[in-house]
Structure formats: C-alpha cells, structure tokens
Amino acid sequence: MSKEIIICENLNKTFETSRGSVPVIDNVSLTVLKNELLVLFGPGQCGKSTMINCMAGLEPATGGSVLVGGQKVVKPGPDRGVVYQRMALFPWLTVMGNVEYGPKVRGVPKKERRERAQHYIELVGLKGFENSYPNQLSGGMQQRVGIARAYCNEPDVLFMDEPFGHLDAQTRYLMQEDLMKIWEKEKRTIVFVTNNIEEAIYLADRIVVMTNCPTTIKKEYEIRLPRPRNYVDTEFLKLREEISAVVDKAL
Amino acid sequence: MKKKKDYIWILSILSIVIFAGIWWFCCDVLKLTNSSTLPGPATVVNTFIKKLSSSAPDGATLPAHIFSSLKISLGGWALGVIIGTPLGIFMAWYKKVDLFVRPIFDLLRPIPGLAWIPLMIILFGIGITPKIATVFLSAFVPCVLNSYTGIRQTKDVHLWVGQTFGADDTQMLVHIAIPTALPMIMTGVRVALGAAWTCIVAAEMLASTKGLGYMIQQARGIYRPDIIICGMIAIGAIGAVFSGILSLIENAIVKGVRRDG
Image (cartoon, rainbow over all chains, first blue to last red; front, side, top):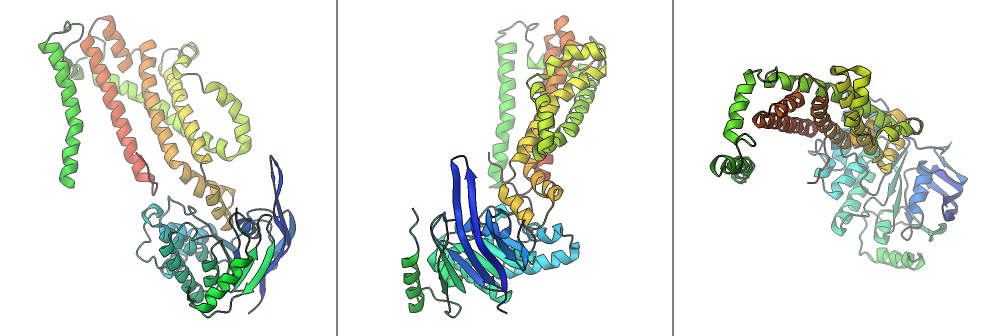
C-alpha cells in the first residue's frame, strides 16, 4: 500500500517579473504515498499553491523534477485533478454538466459518464441538484461540485488548493467532516493546501509545514490520531500548539 | 406578488399614453404649432392607416418601404454577424490571426458606416449592393469587438480545469472560451442590429428609390410632416421589436450567468 506516487526532487520555482526574479520554491524534496492525505501547511502567500501548480503541471518548475506515478510532469493531465479555491466551476453548465466534463473530454460515452457523474454527485451529497446552475448554489455546495468534478475524472492524485478558504466557519467544519467521509469511502491520494492549523490536523495523515517565501520544508508531522477527530481533544490541542509554534508568521 | 407585477407593467403603457396625450394637447388643443408643421397624433394615425395601402405620394405603400428596408438591413446584419463574430473569436484566441488582422481592423474601425456610402455608390451604383455593403460594415465592427472582448474574459482557472482534464486547444475554445464569451457575443449581435437598422435608414436618405429612409426624404421634399412622423414611428417600433426578439433569444441560450441590471 505505501507506494510512492508523487516524488518531488529538488523542486525550484522562480518567477521572472518586471522587477527581477522572485524565487518562490526553494529546493523542495517531497514524496507522497498512495492514498495518503498530505497537507501542505504554511503561512499565506508562501508558495503552497505554486507547489500544487508545479505538481499538477500548470506551472513549469524552474529546477528539479516532479514524478507522478513514475511519469515526469511536463504538462497538466487527467491523472492529476485539481480542486481550486473558488469560482472554478463553469457557470454555463449545470452541476451534472460540470461533473461529467472530465469524462466527456476524454470521450467516455454519454450513458457511462452520466452514471459515473451521478455517483459522485450523490457521494458529495448533492442529489437533487443535478440540474442547478452554480449561481443557484451556496459556496459550500459549489465546492462540493468542484470535489465531485475532480473525483469524477478518476485521477490518481487530487490536489486541493485551499478549497474551503472562503467559506464561513460553520460550513468549513461541515465540509471538512464530509471530505473525510468521502475520502474514507473512496480513497485517493490527496494533497491538500491550507493555512488553517485546525483544518490541517483534522484532515491530515501527514502535515508538511512550509516556510515563508521562498518556501521550503520546515518540518513534517505524522498525525496518528484516530478518525473522526475531535477539534477539542487534548491530543489535538497539543499538536495544534506544537505546530503553531513552528510555523512562520505571515506578514 | 403576481398582482403587484401586473400593476407595475401598466406604468410602461402609461408612459406612451401620457406622451401621446401631451402631444395631442399641445397640437390639437393649444394649437402651439401650425398643423402643417407639426400635425397632432390623430392626423398621424390617420396617415399611417392610409399609408398602409396607399402608394401616394412616394410610389410605394408603407409595408413595401418597410420590407425594402428590412431586406437590406437584415441581409447586411446577417453578413456582419456571420463574418464578424468568428473573426473576433479567432483574433482573440489565435495570436497570429490577431497580429495579421488587427492593423487593418484598427484602420477601418473608426470609419462610421455612413462614411462608406459615397465610395460604395461610386463602386456599386445605387442598387441594393452598396447599401448591403454599408450595413455590413456597420454591423461587422461591433460583432468583432464584442466577440474579441468576450473571449478575452475567459478565466485562467477555467482553462486550467480544461487542461487538467486533458482538453486540447480546440476543445478549450469550444467548451470554455466561447461559452464564456456568449453573453458578450449576444450583446454584440444586438448592437450590430441597432447599427444596421440606423445605417440603412440613413443610407436610403442619400441614394435610393425605396425604403423608409427614402419615404421620409420624399415627404420632406413635398412638405408632409405627417408621413415623416409615420416613418419615424415605423423605424422606432421595428427597432424596438428587434431588440425585444434578440433579448428573448439571448435569455434562451445564455445559461447560468447572473446578469446585473
């Protein structure tokens, strides 16, 4: 089971801007195991999203390499799904249209992709909303569609870039709980980016703490608490305190 | 809720009634103007009804004039949409097309449709061709501009989604960029129809033997303000109907986009 699925070796990323080069990722080496839920945790704007973009192939790395499933990442591909922060659904398509889009692009026959999309729509708890348009849904529901859409393409790896970042606190707890349930039911490798310590400890098998920009790995924590986790459990709070002390403060 | 909406709708009718009332009051009651300079609404309605079947004094009935104008403006408009919209889309999506077409387009764009008429008359005479060409040029520009701007509004994150799902360039254009641009494209189509309609009337005033613009111009020559006003009402009403029909089409094909205002 514990097979390595993502291997980043000496990953570097520098953006060339009009004011000179800005290093964002500094020599990060990281492996992610199959079906692991890895959380990249760090202060805001530290380069976590850039890490995800490099692994997903949306941004070319300027140094080092990323291997996913043994293949070197050079461009985006259907083996790597991404759930974005917000506004990433296609507003002109219904929930069904959005979720079945991945299989549709790959030429899966209509009947089959509809069944598959239906399965994932039900998995994220949106049965009955198949024909709604995104602007008729709440923020939490929209992110559920985003998760279903990424799942429906059946990628090997799912990247989640602060998917609950703009939700209100209540919805956020609920979404974390539901994401756990979904993941327990359909195990996938998930790389989850957040700047929220509670969210990180609640979800993660392993937390990788990133430093400020240019980002590098500061420390790693294996989280062995049993699931479902309790936000006010003593162990939970202890971990929270310990990791909070380690992380850089965002400006 | 329903009742209130019905009630509010009456306001729109009321505005037309009040407008006609003031017109009638000024012309027929107060007699502020000579009736041969500005006739009252009753005279205009009368002329309008007569003109529906009479071809005096300008050689054709009102429906014949309308038909002639519609034929040219819709023809030129359709050409403008069919050629302009894809051109705008390709310019926005393919950098090379943009670089190739843009210099010529930027030179042609500021020239108002009407400024083409003299050249068109010299090239094509005063038949239907110069007018269709003129209307085409007026309709073409908003179609190109709006589809171009619409495609450029495509969000990066939507393109990333397409890429991570393995969509190729053409699929991204068809599945993502064009749906994004559709509201803008529809606005362009509507603006183009307005421009086409305005342009044809003006073109007919300059060189023509039929059409609403021609009818108005002839009526001016023989001092018949009632016919002029009939023509203006026909122009306004048809323009409003066009706009309404296109709004309906737009609502039917543009889905899931919240429009403000």
